[in-house]
Image (cartoon, rainbow, N blue to C red; front, top):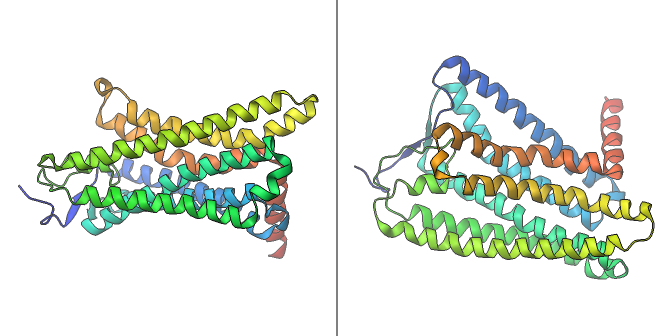
Length: 310
């Protein structure tokens, strides 16, 4: 038996035992990672370079892409390296860093999505006050609040998790350092501190969800009163990408957290985790670029400029 002070590394769950399947998983994850890098990188570059996109909505979208890149870059390169080199080990310090950074990106993204719902609410319901309520300084403050909230959430949960004594070995039944799996290694009731903190965070997250829900209730009320069909379509087109991203983010997280214990298996847990960790960063750029003609045109110009400059 060991405790957390004597643990120098953790052993992550392998995706496969045979070398061929390990290389297959490496290739699959490499493709997913490159797709996320390309999609989010294009959005970041396009918004940064195109002055027409220097508006609150695209400013928040740029931050969202940075958070998506951060979340997938925190866990996927290590998983790819383990599959490529046929290893399961991750050092204690790397595991701490992975937990902290992943929580920072994910919590920050959720808070940012809440801020983005306010942006859409003001744009649709209070268009005459949009420039006042969402000036450049206000946007920076709201984005900083989202990042700061993510940082505080990550710091508290990481500290609580790794202060818990661990004596049930060092094997983590997940492909990255996930707090619930780490707490399974606890040998005392001190893990209840993290449970209480999780309940408090869940209550706060529920408040954000209610805010998003109420924002869209007001948005749909206003949109449905617009007399022209073209006007309703234009208003909906600016909201649907954000609503789709929120739905994807919440549905994958809720499914992962609420799946029945009776059907829980190691392989199912692995599949569910891959969905909620990798799907949003890859799909979010597609959702925004496919539903937004202005962004799509700007991305096309960036790509054309890059090709012709070479």
